[in-house]
Image 1 (cartoon, rainbow, N blue to C red):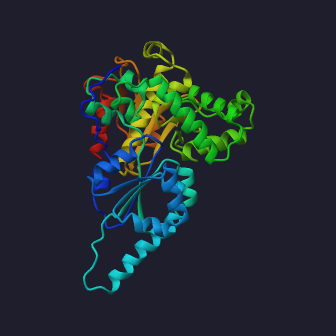
Image 2 (spheres, rainbow, N blue to C red; image 1 turned 120 degrees about the vertical axis):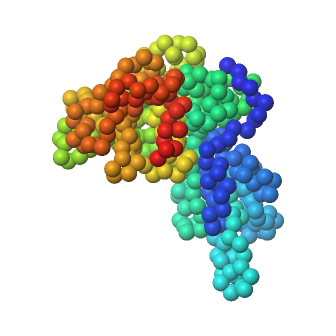
Image 3 (cartoon, one colour; image 1 turned 90 degrees about the horizontal axis):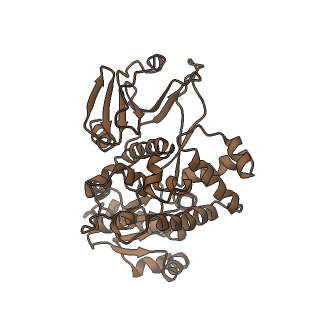
Length: 407
């Protein structure tokens, strides 16, 4: 697979929110490795911000051992990447910001409040542990994950949905035409997921952790059964739950909670599991070629995973806190995704890989929990919007972001 990479920059939906000065001195951008954080911050800075990468051991050592000297040698504005490795820098940043605020209280000429430091980090576990308490009230947090379908389609309109599922959304896959997708994702899983994340979480049973990763990928879109995964991996159920929690905090997997009402005893209470990035799920399932994957029984759940990723990435990129869940009864009535725009507005989504899926009816029991839902929105890979019935509308995954922007 090759793409036109004459333009190496893929526009990110979160760009406009980061670019806007919101009256705070520090912005912190969090997301997994190689999702595009550094490139995004450099693009926003337009060469006004100096780029510092703490993967450089010499720079990291100075910032960690003598943060005051480091900041004196590197005056603001700064882009600071992989900041989780220099926790001693954050109290010094706090002092810098507090000093400016104090001067503003007494100076007749006020310092304009604008972004002075843009920080990014890929290890959310370490960031949460070492950083967030220090800068409370002094920083604004943003979250970035891999490319959404919408972002990919804007830059590569001819790419197929099947290719997007197979590739996932790591930007370098699309901007480096010489890259082997399989080898790149293998390296990513080995170096970041299996080592970096596991190490920071104190996971010592790496072989068992690898097995659990594969078992999770095989269960994409399914109800999580911790006991089954534990039995197949040789670790305890509580350990499996802890490891899934680590992957969830790292924004590698997404645990989708069910809608549950005490008034409706028929509803399923256990969550489902997905990956933020479809490419990771594809590789962990073992697919190394696009054709066999598209013909496999797994393609339906992998497409459902892609749709889930599109919804949660839209929410993240546009700063929406809309609750998302699935609805399912013990009688197997189910709606794949319910998105709560507000208490009186809910969107119901069903996902089908086939282009001629046919109309989907609203489950009768769904109306008890959500009387405001008047239609099911059926999401398919491609094609125009089609009204299938009074209660069912079909759209492509590419149109999903356009739909959500209306709310």
